[in-house]
Amino acid sequence: MSYQPNTQRYESMKYHRCGRSGIKLPAISLGLWHNFGGVDTFENGRSLIRTAFDLGITHFDLANNYGPPPGSAEENFGAILKKDFTGYRDEMIISTKAGYGMWSGPYGDWGSRKYLVSSLDQSLSRMGLDYVDIFYHHRPDTETPLEETMMALDHVVRQGKALYVGISNYGVEETERAISILNQLGTPLLIHQPAYSMFNRWVENGLTSLLEDHGVGSIAFVPLAQGLLTNRYLNGVPSDSRALKPNSFLNKNDVTEDVILKVKKLNVIAGDRGQSLAQMALAWVLREGRITSALIGASKVSQIKENVEALNNLTFSEDELTAIDEILNS
Image (cartoon, rainbow, N blue to C red):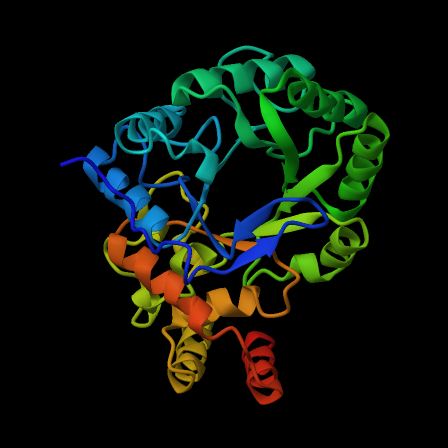
């Protein structure tokens, strides 16, 4: 039997306007950074996408190099779209990125116009799409003039290959320059995708205020700190932890006794709120309305369901926020 989406999928999800644009994003978005590559089980990835859509998650975030191998996440996502989502494209926000190493030679990395335009063409081919909704430059390039990189983003919008553009991993000063250049070109910056979690609060030092001032949205990646802010690490590092896998941003050395102690204390507060630690961590990222969406990853359907339930309680008391800050700063 072919897939039939949940007819009530939009009733419980919260949608937030992305900056001053006409686009609204779901409070929880699904990223395909892990678990959708050629080394992963296709049917599991298919179930994850279906479950997300059934719960009102309309935004699916990819990049050219997601896999492994690089490109395979986009290929698998394209196959899932063809199998299950024909007729639903206009209900989806699909994003991809370029900026990290993708192919050999001097033209397959960083931020040149040649790389970005070629990469998007390849991404569209892999996914079987005519356009993406958001195309990001994935990281700053210190050797390519920022004007060239932003002109490339403007170019793909004018080509009709992307509806909006974004940046990721940019610092405050770089972001301000990018906003200015894109405004002059007539293609405003839609969104910034920074790392943000209880354990990584750098965006609070000027970035969120800058984005608000210029009407730019934001989507936080790794809001669960690569799984640290879940129940998986309450008793140390499990044998199947991401921290033990190669090519992971989370290192076993990051999971110290001090970090585990903080996680345990945070878990107590979450329990008092009637939430899992993961749910509280997501609610915390979204707490002030300054972050448009929290970008989750998942390897199991149950994780997506649990994370979406975080939206049932996004309110924190002053006492809770103070207690959380004391734990994080200890």
